Figure 1 (cartoon, rainbow, N blue to C red):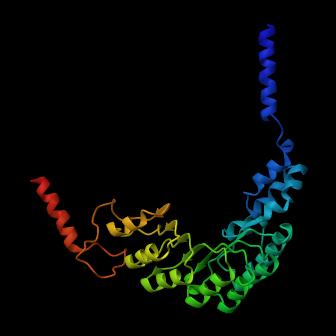
Figure 2 (figure 1 turned 90 degrees about the vertical axis):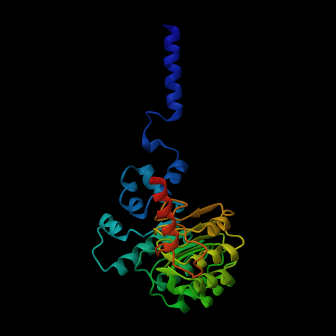
Amino acid sequence: MAAAYGGAAGESSTASAAGIGGRWEDLNRDLLVAIFERMGVADLIAGVPFVCSSWRVASLDPLCWRNLDFRDWESICLRLFFRRNEILDFADLLDFSITRAHEHLDSIYFPDFADDIDLLDVSERCPELTYFSLPNPHVMEHRFCEAVSKLEFLKGMAVDESVINREVLQHVNKCCKYFTELNVFAENVDEEKASIICKSLPDLRKLEITNSAISRQAIITFLDELKDLEHLDISGYENSGITDLVLEKASRLKVFLWDSRFELGEFMACSNNEEDDWLLQRSCECMLDSKVMEWLAELS
């Protein structure tokens, strides 16, 4: 009985030490902050503070507010019962969130209606910002560049193709010496646009252009000219195939993400086709004919 009792006590002690059966409000504050850092703005405002006093206090820590994500604006509005104009509601929420962060943001993902004025406001209040996502295609270039010039520590951004031009990207490269990551929202990317990106931002390590029609030559341009590139993501569109040349050049990357309409190795564009075809186009007919003949031969 003594041994059994001692074992039970030991197990109870271990369980208590591990926090099993404890109360949520008794969790270590640093642990709570680490958890709340991963929560959205709506949860930090309308959820966490109402659980208990310790959670409310932890949610006030500036670390919880350093990475702001407003992309799902509709859900945020529902959670926070916003009823006014979205621009006014966002301006108030942005001001509130930046104040909670003690004007020290690491990253911010704007809603699709936010513009260069919002970016400029953030850059003036949070000059140590390292990443932003601004998908709105209707931005004023001069104000966009003014905002970027204040972000010395900017490492990356996600922007619409409307600001992907030589002047803007060279300005980014000049003002932001740590800049290595670019995400472009674009319907299509040709060799010319790819060349502009490569020449203006030669130190890119991570490039994402998803859900976009990208010419094969544009991909080759990225792989040839961006010597430090480690991560290339062109996924999200079912392309007709990636040539062996592209795969060979991409083999040096740590990450290469792409989607194909067919399984790897099937219906690749052949070497007879020298045009800069878009990857979304159908494969060349001579290659298809060859595959059909091989299939018929197997049947016979």
